[in-house]
Length: 441
Ligand code: ASP
Image (cartoon, rainbow, N blue to C red):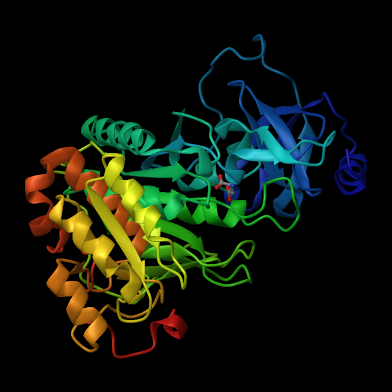
């Protein structure tokens, strides 16, 4: 136990193992046994084992009083009538675990971030959560997101679809690694359409046991969006900036991790986030036009993803054999991430023509990140178009890759060109915004 909690308990005349009543601000009262301090809880967190067997973490700064009292005559862990005074009619939120840093803690023997935290453990250090929503948890896998494959996207999509279909929830939160979070959020956006409730992806750049962790605010805000925001889209909720002021809620198909370590790594590309959530849980809409909640809406599931797609970045000196090898390996669609408005070097033209003639569909995105491709400006672009390369407006390259995998998986190669150039779930914005969106949000 760190000094601050120890000092506080001593001052109140109670000890670890005592059965106590804890009075908080807002007339909230908890009863339970004082537990030894959790290895990764923050210094000011007091851990209490409630009569129903769950541990919760309580911020001692919010404690008005703590008094020793008679323990009820039950064995610990036996479920009893809930003694916790909670606001009535809280929304019900499913917190689904996929993995990543948000579900990890530091292994102090090696110093590496890798030990798994159960969702219960994670929620137990966030006492506020019980006041925000009724939480169910389900770990469907625990992988760092760099290990996920398109078949994991299918599994996650099916799980989300079945949780929504149970009609038990007001929203779903998905705990996910940040590295490929944008890919999975895009995948679920295509796979589970016509949502009646929000599906909120959330991760953290630093594990929950680190003082600088962004896990707590990200998770609490994601639960607030899932439980209360009038939105029924697949979104990603992450820090907007380096302070703890705002969480940005990004559209699942238009978001990208743009920094390796900063907490504000995620940005909406060529558009604004849908909304911000402040640390008190207030929503500020930045962009309208999203689907609103409607419990009577039935979701539609298209859960399959094909692996016959490649995302290829062009660079000066690109070896044409790399493209040729795709042809020999059964790839049916290539997302070519070209330079600028959508270009590759002329020394690739012949190979590109060969691929197209052999039935490979080639789509162009830009490695510029912001802005849209335009293959009518320069001869290079026009020539590539003549060869059969199809431009994809301002869709993010990663989203284009996910989309091609989804189209092939569910509808087959015949539908590729038509669906790749149709805005299915708002993945390409019709016009590039006039304002500079890099700075707007
Ligand atoms: N490599 C980790 C992952 O994506 C990083 C993180 O969770 O933020 O799973």
